[in-house]
Length: 326
Image (cartoon, rainbow, N blue to C red; front, side, top):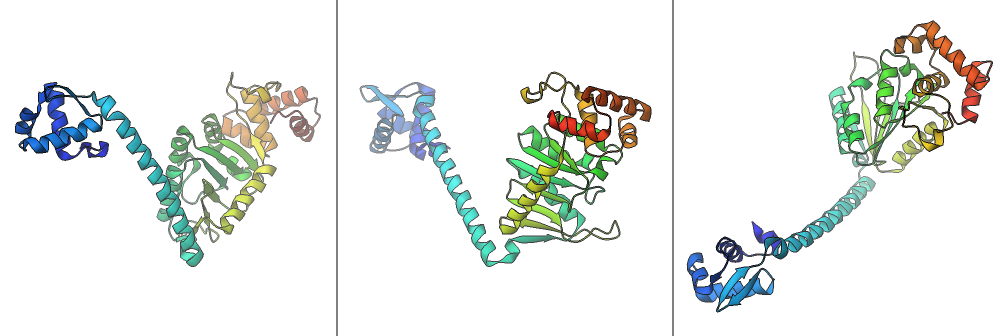
C-alpha cells in the first residue's frame, strides 16, 4: 500500500511494526518479519537513509512520525502524477488534432437520433470546465429549457453560461420565469428577434448543432458534433457576433446591484420588465407569463416611461441604452 511513498514490501512491514511497538531492536524485527538479520539490517539502513526510521542506540530503531516521514513523499508523488496527467492530456489533444487532420470522421460526428443528441447535450455540460454558450430557439427538439438540470449543476461548480434566447421562445408559457431563475443562478442572458440555428458550444472545444431542418415528432433530428477546427472557430465567431447585437436580459436581486449599475433607479422587477420590453416581448405575453393583468403591466411600463422622460416605447429603449440601465 505504501509503495507510492517509496517503501518496499519489507520496509512497509517493518515500519508498521515499529509504529505499533514504538521501537524495537534489529533481531526482534527480523524475527517478526520472518527474514534474516542481514535482510532486516539492509531494510533498516535504507529506511534510515530515507528518513523513515531513526536509530535510538544499541541497534534499536524507532519510527519517524508518518506525517513527517511519508507526507512530503506523497506530496511529491502527487505532483509528479499531476505533471504526468497534464502531459498525457497535451499528448491526447495533439493525437486527436493529428487524427482530425487525417480523418474527417474525427472532425464531425453525426448524431442520428433524439436519444444520441440528448446524451451529448448532457455530456458536454457535465464535462464543461469554463464556459457554455447557447443559441436557444423557439420550440424544442430534445428537451424543454426547464428540463435542463445539467445547466444548474454546471453553474453550481463555477461554469459560465452565456445564453441567447430567440424572442419567440420568451413568449412560450413559463419561459420568462425560467429565464429569471437561470439569471438568479448566474446565467448571462440576452435576446434577439431570431436566431439562425440551435447551437451549444462547450469550452470552445466542441459545438453541437442540427444539420437539417427539424420536421417535428414524426422524424428523428440529425445533429453534428463539431470538434476543434476552423469550422468550430467560425461557429464561435457566429455566437460572439450574435452576442454583441443581442439585448441583455437583466434581473438583479435586491442588495446585489453591482457598482456599474448603482446609478440605475430601477428595482429588480422593473429592470426585468424593461429588459423584456427591449427584447421585444409583447406586453400581453409579459402579463400572461408573470401572472399579472395587462393593465398592471401597462401601468408599470408607463411608470418606466415617466422615469426616463420618454413619450414612446422607442424613446424608453433609447434612454435605457444611453443611461446603461441594461
